[in-house]
Amino acid sequence: MITKDDLLSIGIIRRTHYKDLPEFVFVQRDNLYVPFRTENISELIGEEGFVLRSDMQNEDEGLLTWQDLAGYTIEDKDAGVLGTIEYIDESTINTLATLNDGRLIPLHEDFITEIDEEKRILRVNLPFAL
Image 1 (spheres, rainbow, N blue to C red):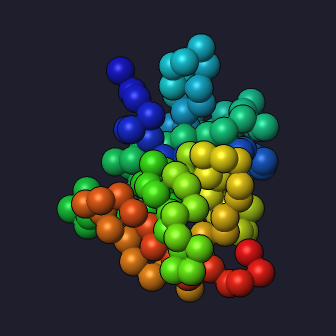
Image 2 (cartoon, one colour):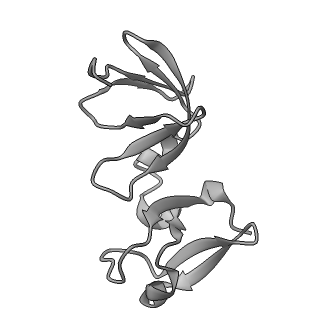
Image 3 (cartoon, helix red, strand yellow):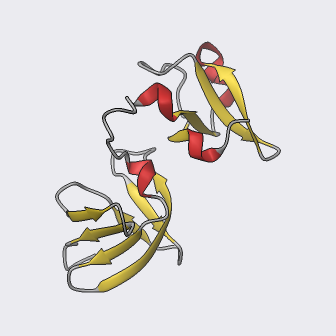
């Protein structure tokens, strides 16, 4: 059975022509992840889509994706611990982390100072205005 750990979110499906997607896209139905052929993606508009993690990255690369940061504690250089990342939204040009208290934090490579995979901490230096 496919679990959420096996999948990567591609965000909310907003259009019917996705390039470079694998053969199947999954959506959650009744607490199960159900596969749909990519050519039938128009049926899924408005739903959150997922793809198999193994289809999107080479396991040997060991690269983190934005989705891998869900569950990490986010710690700002000046403000300290901000919370735990509950969800990553990549559906717009600006990737956002939703924290456990509902706040949204922009995720951008320029803000990230360190990723501690062992302790599951994302250290950032956010602009003062945020």
